[in-house]
Length: 474
Ligand code: GLU
Image (tube, rainbow, N blue to C red; front, side):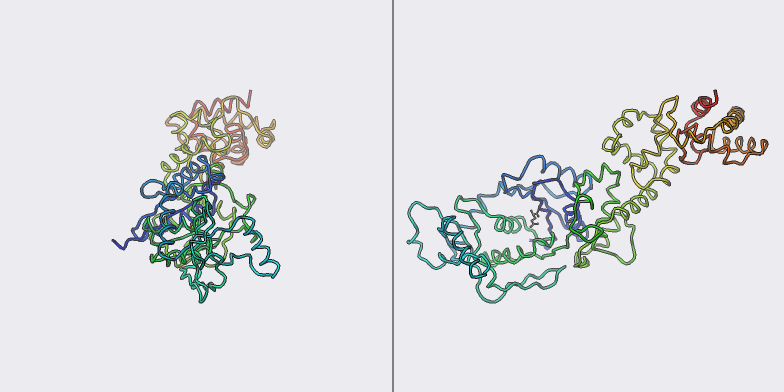
């Protein structure tokens, strides 16, 4: 056996991959990459009523979009039920677990009695020491683990520290139901052991489960993996994460125009830091991440920070790479499919040329698509309200002059050549440059804001530019 780190992400396919799950996957992935280990994927589909194929697919898609790759195939927990059963039966043989035969009504009465005495509703251990020969005929019992009754169970957690659970609080919980279905608590332990998982990294809502799971590990004589329970994500106001705060499926973040790398950077920084570094590449994160450095306190999700970070990543990104990701994401953006349908090679080339200017003004791919809208519209352009206000009678007169000046550009049609012609016309006519540039922008884009107007002229090309201006002066 090698000592390589094996982590796992173990989502329940009862809904989409939400942002907290994505961060758990990210921490598992980063830790595996950082240590040159592997990350496995286990789909915890034992809850047959709530698990769906569509949710499994959404989880796989979400992880793939984020680039969080796993080793080997996705393991189905449900398919491993025979093995879970086998281990439960072995624990009975080892004297570490036993069959209990209470009916649901008897269990309810037991809980009721405990409640009446203000005690926690725990199993009273009735069958723990009874002889199996006393088992009622024809009844299949449930298997319960013999939990220790004295001392404490300690979880050595790399994030939470040493967490102690008094054993008197642990009851003999069920590991195999009377219908032969393993419980979640038991299945997780058997799977993690069989899959060779060395490090468990998951949400701190599983911390108390860790104590119960430790009981099973010890009963089997298995080594307990290293545990790290990471704090959950809260909203910016400190309240539990809701949709309003960003508790969306990761596919929603794609539709909102975030780059996977920026989202990962943001998620990594939620509860973990590396000095003062805010902006990190995936490579940086891999080389800097250590699970022991994750904070104990709840992290707060803040869309404004995510937006700002996304903008930084967009500006840093090489234009060709950004174009590729924009083209790949376009179909998922609101109104994007219509643009994607019009994205021919000419428009792609125009987009690439316009990107340096566009990305200065956009924090997300949605804003980028919005800024690039002028490339996709057909003449005569729809003119928005603010642009229409810029195109008053005076402005149209100026525009007529600018049109004539631009027509005289004889050499190559570049931003510099267009700028020279417009400046010369403005100076000669005694106009401020803005008084010429503003109506030009309105005529060329139908908007009052856009990348630099000379860049717009260059990107659109001579014929289209002159035609768009002419449309506004007739
Ligand atoms: N399936 C559990 C969940 O989605 C995770 C269990 C684990 O990581 O041990 O919350």
